[in-house]
Each structure stands twice: as structure tokens, then as C-alpha cells.
Length: 393
Image (cartoon, rainbow, N blue to C red; front, top):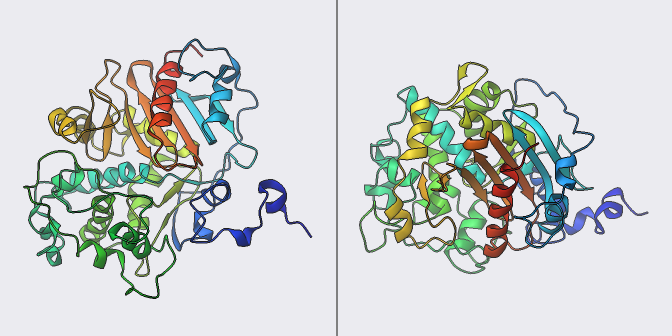
């Protein structure tokens, strides 16, 4: 008998394994069901409150002059860009949304490296309570980091991706350090020929490159996983619990979220978080409002201001970016450097949280883009968001 999954997706559930879950076509299902593939911890909202998607989103069917990369309407572009879920807010209200036939307004979706930006919000909350000082060395919370690349850097270096690290962020690597990293997070099948490592054990094997910390921007996901471990060391609680208490419940999230974990329960803080598109839009709206939600300061206003203003442009340029030529990077968030003040969080396979303060616009796009990077499509997405932000609802 043909199963419902096979009818909807063209393949059976058994075809989705650790070896296939991040490849097309299987990713259209697995990105919304990561907890079925990788061990995960639940991030609880105060209470689940199922939502109903907008019945119509005429904005997405309106012809646009720019930003569509040759496609007729925003909805056409969303289909072209492998979109699973899309939400657009204006002044805190949802004004447009789109879900692929296999997606749903209440279905969490893995956001990959947008997780980094969410993890940084936890660091912000802990800093406000004096539990983490970004200016202190990593070893103040993780003494066993001595002898690794993290043995003589500050937490601020980690937050800003300015750690001197001998590591190659090669997403398709199958036999080097990145493959070990994937196995340690339980994202890839185990290799019988190599020892099994936990995430922390892997991180502590990483060595410093031949230059000082604090230099050019150097994007490395292990840095953000280290931040997740520092969250746990600073609080004595699991990452998912801290996430729930300090962000998800105060935010007023409507659906529980989740995060993948390794064999010891260490969270994949760099890329393993799954949330709904609407709840992620609420995060963007909270940051747009200087950390406030319904009059409550969830994230310190001073931290948001620092994140938006203090990133070092020269460090960004020295890192030879392929996006945002005027940009900066601070506390795991990207600043566009454009006059509209737009800032964003970005994840592989087409995950975006984009905020344009000048028009009070928040956009979320969750995707199952086959190519994890696709720099050309990344540029197209950014142009699309800028064009949408300039439209009247």
C-alpha cells in the first residue's frame, strides 16, 4: 500500500536516513521533521496555541518591477527558490504568507545557521544577569579548552566569528574535519573506521591558525556550538531549557520548538534549531523593537544596539564576503550596512530572517533549497526581500 508520505513526496519514509536527509528530494520532508532523523530536545513554549494561516495573501500575487530574478510575482519567486514556508510582517502584523503543499503554519522547520543568531540572544540574556561576560576568556567557563584553538580567545571573539581557527567550513566534505564534525553532532552516519566523538570532544581538538584572534571575520560553525556549551556551563541547565525560559516563553511563541543533540545531549546550537515561520518572525519583531515584547524586555536594549552598530566593517571586508559588501557581523547577526538599516540571520539551504527597520518589516523564508549555499540564489533572495520591504501592503 502506498503511504501518505509517498503520495505527498514521491518517496517512502524509510528512504530518509542520516545519509540522505539533507539532500533533495528527501529534505522537503526531513527539514520539517528533523527530530525524527536526529536525536532532539524539545524547546517548550508556555502553551501550544495552533495558528491559522491567512486565507489570502494578495501581495504575493501582485506584479513587481524588481527583486524577482525574472519571475512574474512574489509567489512565483517563492516557488522558484524552493520555499517551504514564508511569512511577512509589517508593524507586528502578518500581512502575507505562503506554504508549500507539504508545509503547514504550525510545523517547525529546521533553520540551520539562523540557530546561531537565536543562540546569541540567549547569551544576551545571560550577560544581562551577570552569568556570562563576553569580554572574559572562553576558559573562564570551559577550562578544558586550554590547548585548543579556544584556549586563549575571548567569548567576544567567538560571538563575532573572529577566532583564529584551523578549520574549513566545507559543507560537502566527506573525509576531513568537517565530516568528523557532522558525525560528532549525529547528523551523519557513524564511520566504523574512526573513533566516535562527542561534539565537545571534537571542538577541543580544533587548533589555532597561524595568526592572532580578533582579526578578519572567519565563519566557522563550531564557534556557535561552543556558545551553546557555554550557555550550559553558565547556567547549569540544558540548552533547550534555557532557550525555553529565556526566549521562547517570554517571546510568546505559539508552538514548541526543538534542537538536535549529540550523544551526550549537547545541543547543536550552530544549526539544529527547528521553529515555525511565524514564531521566527516574532523573534525578528522582538529584535526590531529593541528586545521588547508586550512591554517586557526579553533581550537587553543595549545588547540589540551593540549588535546593530558595533560590528567591524573592516573585519568583514578582510574576510572576503560573498554577500553584503557594505556589511558587518556582530554577535552572530549580519548587518547589511545599507541605508535602510536592514539586518538578518541566514542559514544554509535557504533559511532567512530579514528585518528592515525603516519600513517596520520582518520577513521569514524557510526552504529546502538543494544546494546548501548557492551564492547566486542568496543574492536573489536578498534583492527579493529588499523589494518586498518597499511595497505598500
